Image (cartoon, rainbow, N blue to C red; front, side, top):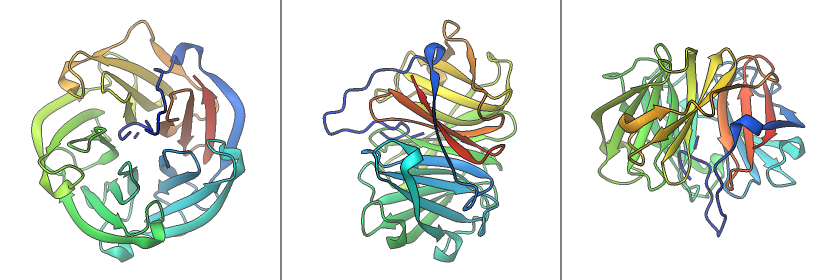
Length: 281
């Protein structure tokens, strides 16, 4: 997810689009099962020194967990730092499904299928979830009552969610960047399943210029790539048949993906093994 919607990082980092066909498992992993046995969302700080996991059935099912990585972008070096119960801050969301941060770490967004809304939080200390405070919730129930993913355009002026049943991507415009209360559905929807012949899309991610989109499916443990003829407009998306559908055998029910800031690594987490896996792309 993820540069927002992506994991593109700034700071002079040069992005290269991942090559899913040649992607390979690095034999690098990290179990998050002690904190969250059903992880549904993953996000990294742009410099790779922090990782965040949200899920639905942990010690508190409405918790976000923060991890410190002693080696940037290497989840095997992660240690659990702290957890945050997002419901106690004010949002009615007992089953967080997706997580996203503003690129400077001062805002956090959660989506889930209890409140069917995008929940916004401010962080007074960037990237420190213990400093979070609830701002507001903006419903997406007019489009889906089972949102499972949350993704932003890199400038914060567009937002995307996925419907759990049907795998449609819904697109919203924000009149004020990074302010979810200003979002409005712009009647743009794209069906991820149709060209792939898979089921249950769980998350999407974009490249930094919005011309490519990747989706992960827990039906068949696969990923697919799409090209966007108009950047950041999912109505212009088309299935990339050259890449095809790629399977990853480490996690049979993947729920979330994230790309390193330069596109050279990919991270997948899911509910079969409750583990973050790293791949070279």
